[in-house]
Amino acid sequence: MAASDFSRLIAAAADTIAAHADELTALDQAIGDGDHGLNMKRGFEAVRAETEAIATKPLPDALKAVGTKLVMTVGGASGPLFGTLFIALGKELPPAPDHAALTAALSKAIEAVSARGKSQPGQKTLLDVLQPVYEALAQGKTGTEIAAVADKAADATVPMKALRGRASFLGERSIGHMDAGARSTALLVRAVAEAIEGS
Image (cartoon, rainbow, N blue to C red; front, top):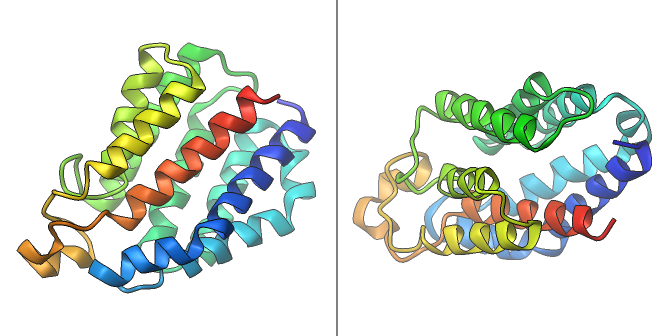
């Protein structure tokens, strides 16, 4: 992937998170700490500030650098989880991945996030978006279709009862609210998919 392409992906991700920061904060205020939007915005703006240095690295190293920066700057539970996702992708992907390599890497990255968060799909977390996205990717769906799967998966967290994270303390009261981490994951998936398909 050319540096200009990766720069565009960083910009798309940072722009999307910034545009939806208030929405993510509102979602998190309902069942979490209320800081998810601000934390994610801070993290991706920190990544954006180092775009030039990050984008010139080979793809695996660039992804690890993004993940490391998110761990250092996002804060809360989201920093380690989103950081782990990018770092694991960087560890698993070759410099010029094909579809099979990308699919395999995402599977390993999901395992890493699951281990870090001690959670599984079905517990009202970002994994409830990542797992359907992986399945859609494995089925060879287009970027547009994968983005739609991600949006639908985030919506599907609304009726779930939270079993992990701060929201789990609310028990039944967590039902009826979308998980903020699931929503931000869906936003990032759409941003990346649209940026890649638009290139």
